Length: 367
Image 1 (cartoon, rainbow, N blue to C red):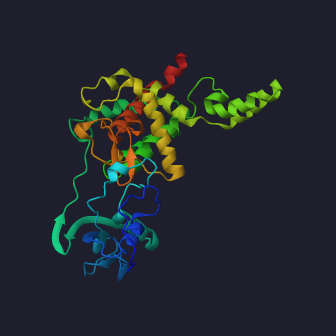
Image 2 (cartoon, helix red, strand yellow; image 1 turned 30 degrees about the horizontal axis):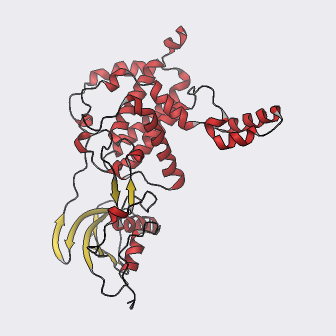
Image 3 (cartoon, helix red, strand yellow; image 1 turned 135 degrees about the vertical axis):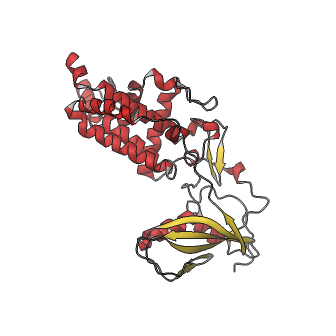
């Protein structure tokens, strides 16, 4: 136990360590208040023994013989530092603060799954401060447009005829895009961030040839363009500019323009769209840029999707319409918001079907 050291109640906005390590350190201070919670953990493989790491304890719970692949129960107990009345994390929240989309439980189960190569899934909370209390997980929000209304199987043949008429050179790219979309709607309620990545990739599979017009070096990097302009030899300046531009794929721009080009009025005129949190057509170009940039930050910089992506939308809004959101030390402003997954899913669905209709062999023959 550490002594003669004042407890630090401030929020460490730039502490980039995982939450379970911060909590472990916080419990070392003298007279720190804490609370315990226990969770049911599910696995489908034979697992024995127990794990103790400071205030964290994971053990087998269900004593029974089961075959590989059958569900087994474990128990995870966590002791956490209690937040003092002086803590106001929302007041100190910052755009650059640490956030990965989960909590201590998520960290421990994800790390355990990696180290043991075993699936450990989070179940309900079953105990609070040594008192049996069952906290069931809230039901995930489900987009009603995916489950309500009537769908007629008799409509499928007309779409398959369009697939039959698709330009032969586009078949491989199109079915890959469709399969990525299909994987996204299977994930969209339970793992909306992964669904979002698949939806972006679905469009990427098709947009590489999208015409984006003439692009200058200034469109890519104004600072670099200014430096190249300082070259006195004009021919050398043009050669350098051309060499730089030739290396660039401009995928974000192609992604954005491909979607915009393949939207028809019926998408915006749908009667199912909400009154609040409705995306305007004139704002879509900027929002698509944010979506693609977020995809790149997630895959290449390890930055998770914003909090809103995993939260149920208020009144089925297409984009959050609050003035700001914070969790722990992390804060998002309206200028950082991206559309909810269900909006982007409906947009990708529309774009893929529009693309299919517009890329028929007979249409190209007429041109």
